[in-house]
Amino acid sequence: MSTQAFSGRTVAILVGLCALSLLVGLALAIFQEELGVVRSAGSDSFSYSALGHHGYKMLLEDLGYPIVTSRNNSALKTGEDGILILAEPDLVSNERQSRDKFWDMIYFNNYTLVVLPKRGGTPDPVRSTFVTSVSNLPLKNAELILEDLGILSKLWGAGHSRDLTWDAGVWDDRPFIDDVQLVNAHNLTPLIACAEGTLLGHLQLDLKAENDKWFAGEILVLTDPDLLANHGLRKGNNAIIAAKIIDYMVKNGGPVVFDETLHGFEVNPSVFRSFFRIPLIFVLLQVLFTMVAFVWLSNGRFGSLRKPPVARGRGLEFLINNTAELLEYGGHGSFVLGRYYRAATGAVCQRLHLDLPRTSPMARTRLMNISATRSPDFPYQKMAAEVPAVALDSSAKPQEVLALARAIHRWQQEMTHGL
Image (cartoon, rainbow, N blue to C red; front, side):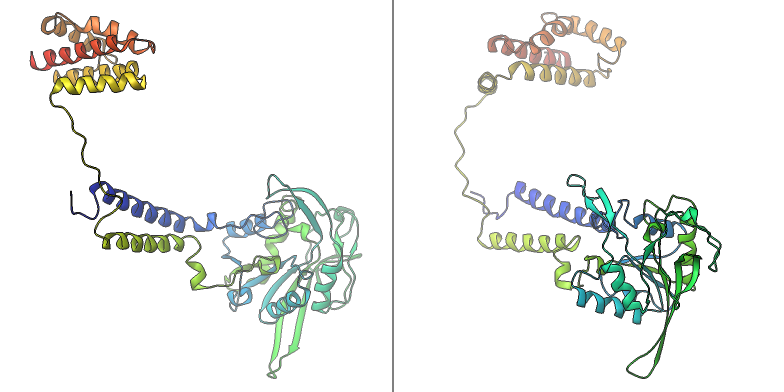
């Protein structure tokens, strides 16, 4: 019995598994962004649904803006010149905690775009990234946002935007929004507005901090999310306006940060937890697998004891008979005969430097002529006619299959060695 702890086959399996794990981990590390995307149908930048903002994120990325999808510490990722986008934040769920987080992000950020919520949808039970129905949301969430921003105004619908005259703001762009949502607020400088109210306004915060330092943060408030939602970007001049908003706010090529913590997608960074997520989980699995392998190795052997070899006969006759019995037992003799025929033909053609008969008529003729000379008892022409017929007949008797196999073997020997 061998004293090796691992057999050659076991070593090959271990090396193959480790290599496969390493390659999979490398591939997932490269494509981690695509594989790690959250599937959503809501009003967030992960969503491809009509309500989502993924199209807006892709539009800005195509325009050359550095995009960050943030699931923690969003305000810290904008730097001095970047803009934080709080698109339809949810302040109703865990209201006190969400409102504190919302205010902290505004307070510690220089430039912020706040988009008020409007619609909600019911996810499709079959396709989770689609919505089956859409309806207007209760006003409570939008009212909480306005209250935290210090905007003393109510939201109201003013019909379709194409029926309004947009000449009350600073910008001349006309939006295309169904049942546009507007506000009337004295502390909101209009950028896109009409006589009925403001769609996009500039809010200047001037707040005194506890350390007696003054904080001045610039905030744009978009009252209707349809302007930059996936379904609205392709309508009218909405995409142009949506791009101008970021161009108006972003300074010196700063990043555009989409906050997803207020959509319920917050992930707390942790080195320990990262080992249980792609791609570091594969490093952890490799370490654990190696430890288990070394434990087995320390036992002096791997797996169960080897059984003593079964006594076998000697000689070609015993081998042929044993093979015939196995083929008869499995019922695959005809199929194996066809493969043996093709293998023997290929070996003969290789020895004689001929192309395969099925690919070259000239090679077939040449093979037939040589076979008629070297193997007159069972020439190739006879073999090519009888063997395929038996190979396709699943009911052929084992004796007939064995006889043809012997004849093919004899033919191959005579063609290659002249026996």
